[in-house]
Image (cartoon, rainbow, N blue to C red; front, side, top):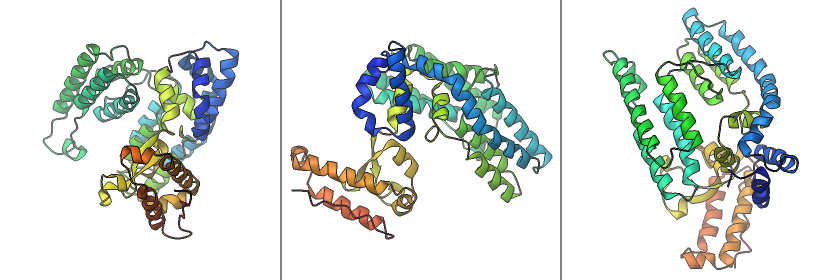
Length: 368
């Protein structure tokens, strides 16, 4: 669908417009304007047309945050400051779209492959789903950091192991139904360059920067300074809260992946009411529909705490209950063998988990 001209994409998504999160809604509004002016433009071409303007806007927001980090870094011991300096030098090259050498990381490769898998799994191509599952299984290899840093562990062996896995993934990809997938081609191309120490253009990634910064600050004896630096870095804008960050994140992605990223936050996902690691069961009584963003944001946090941080969930929860009631009253629950009591049980459970101040009271009176 997202490989179509932008005019057709806008027409197809219009009915889902109200479900989009704020930043994605802003992006969709820009799409609607472009659909009138350049209706045949492709989605990735549209993003590229926005990059010059939004690259400058994002840099203006990022600059003072990096400047504050640079000032804080001057209080670090010389050896750690040198590590930080290398990280910042690499970061500036990424932001300036200059080639940079970044060592290959199988863990990061697996994460990015997983994001592509999410998009492919939402499609209808069964062979593609099998192929991406196979690639993810090949990349699912890790050696704990504590083991890698232990005495007697061969770093050379570990790097050779990663190289062999990447080579196997590359060959499997080239022989699969996914060989024309632009996002996979780009990921494997960049990963090969990293593996063989070839400088290449890599987009700045906020999450990776914070992770790399923490790798350095974890070695600081001054824990107060370490916390200040990480708290400062976390202020870098995310694609969930800033339209320019969203556009720059989409810059190197295919039309299909951009479209998926635009919708994925609002797509319903199965969320555990009581987290699995806290004893929550894998059954319908412990499931609730949650948006992709909210599910990811909540993670393992207790519902009462999450509700205090996100009071708008009170509205979303009632909307969810209302929709369930509509389905139950229309006979859908009966067709699938689900008791209407699921709705009232869900309402009572959310009320109990929300604690007080005030509790989450959901209206189920419309249930017949």
